[in-house]
Image (cartoon, rainbow, N blue to C red):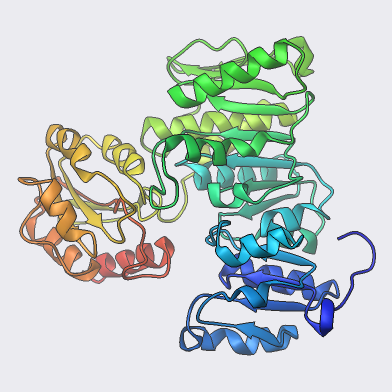
Length: 467
């Protein structure tokens, strides 16, 4: 995409096709049109569901619009296809276009082709948004202009709309599937547990998608891995051995709450220690750990990853400590909503897989009423039984996955499944006792009832605050 764009493809067709009209897809359309490219769009949803978008597309100058599915003929004779994260790359029309020589990339790759400042990429099953947001606050405290976005909500292509010293991007496995030249100076992998089992055949395929984050890194770059995660520990050791043997791979630096770290950051017994080899060009250090506002060891692990990334970037210790101590978290991630009649309410709508549910449950010592439900992603809810029993947890099952949850957690589910979130909140209020915590940690996607986990979390807050 260097140089002057060709405004149309063959036979007068738009040069670029954007597939999927979610947040990133619309941002890609605007980005391309602002740079003079002619753009067509294709979305599987029927026109009736997209009516609100048509005026915006018209204002962008888009005239070729396909709705209700993806037809192979609409994909050929394009110069470039930009795919939204939720669109599978093995879609038959994409396969046909690929065989015809059409270049296919994602919105992330599109953004990074013109963005010059260095990048920090953060991925993992859980904790991405918390870590990226915290990094943004650390860099702001240090006086650096950091673009903060990606899967977090602000599309990566918006990096090109301002002047930034660096970008901090939350990256999903879907986004990483479509990269070609994406190159982060620092890549962070927080954890790896089964997720998106409706998209990936096994954990190995999911790991392959996630580890693509470091595919284009060089020897002068850094790959930060969680030593306490067995999958990432094995992956990192293999990479470190290859680097030692001479391969042009990034320096692997670890972060850990449980083990001594020879290269990276450790947090043990109230102390944070940083040990880095001379080849890193970064000094080590040790200081007292700040008192954090967020509950749970998983949040300490996320904070340690952010700390290490900022340290490698050269941010002063005091700026990092201040940001960690003042950080109160993000919306929909173990967000305290309020306390009513001695019952505390927490919104963890972003807990869309079982590992996130486990981390949320382990964050509390008080008896729990957990709201589980939504659009099932192939999870085994029965695996939660022992943990919930030990934590004096009861379950309100709701939504499309409600019956499955009730069947897999007999004895823990209170009453029959609730039809939706409103009914689930009412039941939780009825069964909770003074001293309990009511926790929305759905373990499911939101798409049976809501357009996103944000919409679900906002609805939960409103329902709680009504009473």
